[in-house]
Length: 267
Image (tube, rainbow, N blue to C red; front, side, top):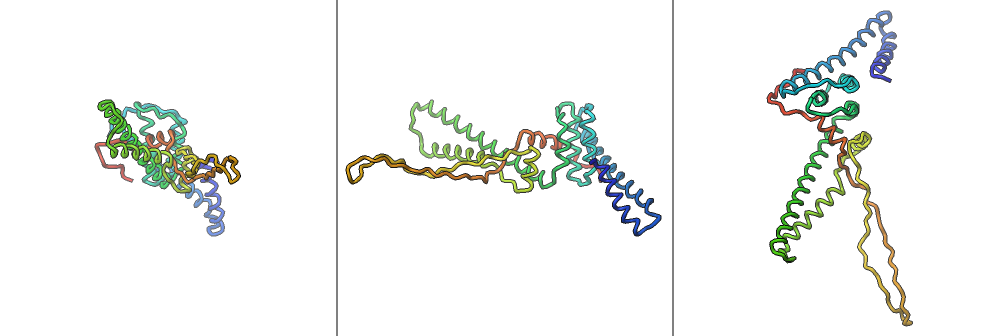
């Protein structure tokens, strides 16, 4: 069912109620309600387009024509959003699609933005911050490992200050743990973001407790017997998420361009 059909169905339902309280004037009031629904959606589209136009002007964006199958779903979904937060996201998305220096031609992005809440988007942005922190950790680890290699080549010995090796080992473990555990996002936000393919759920890990390997021993009769040990493992299924490639592209296409002017379009 299209948005227009839903709107008409709601108006029909309300009209039925109005008939009981207004009598002969119902048809006129029903037409007014329907017109107001269309007018509200039209106003939302105009506000979003005005924002996009201003962003293009402020940033000297060289625009290009975009396919109808990209533009129409964007305008259709944007018409349903009167929240300033999402009006900005729709405008940013349109600008990035229009930018001739960009190559965002995936028609799925307007449908995704039309299916997430402010809370969903907020958690996705927090996940991006987490991924950036992880990138910094991995760079720090690479730098330390490179410095360690240079140090080995310089001294040509395996004897190094213990504290340096310990820091490197701890950093390796921190990076490994951070990558394995991912970032926590609560439900239902995580369910929706995962459904849309914007995040990746980390698989459960198998934990095997430490144990001593048994060998052979001689019993009281002098015979050699073999000891067997049962390995018990348990699953840890509370790991979090990492952002998907689609999620990275979605955040980028919704990102605000740097503008010399901070003034916005009046609402």
